[in-house]
Image (cartoon, rainbow, N blue to C red):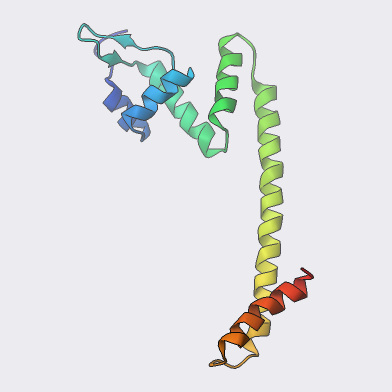
Length: 143
C-alpha cells in the first residue's frame, strides 16, 4: 500500500460518516479485512477499505443487515457472484415494505375516520367523554 494514499482509522471513519469504533466493529465482524499497520501499530487503510465501507453504508440504507452484507461480501470473496442473493434479499425487503405501507395506510384511514367522528363532539366535555372517544374507535374497529 502506498503510504501517500494510506489513511488512519479516523480519516476513514470521517470519510464515510461513522465513528472509529464502527470501523473496528466491522473488522471484528469480518466485514473489513484486517488492515496493515504502521511501525507504531496504527491501522492503515487504503482505497479498498474506503470502497468497502461505502458499500456497507449504502447497503444498510437499503435495509440490508450486517449479516446479509457479510454474506454478500463472502460470496464475492469466494469468487461467486452474489447477484441472485442480493435480488432475493431485496425482494423480501420490498415485500416487507409493502406490508408495512399497507398497515400504515390502514392506520391513517382509521385515524382520519375517528377524527371526523370526533369533530362532531363538542369541546369541553368531561373526562368520560374523552375516554368514550377512544373507546368509540375501539368498538368501531370491532375489538
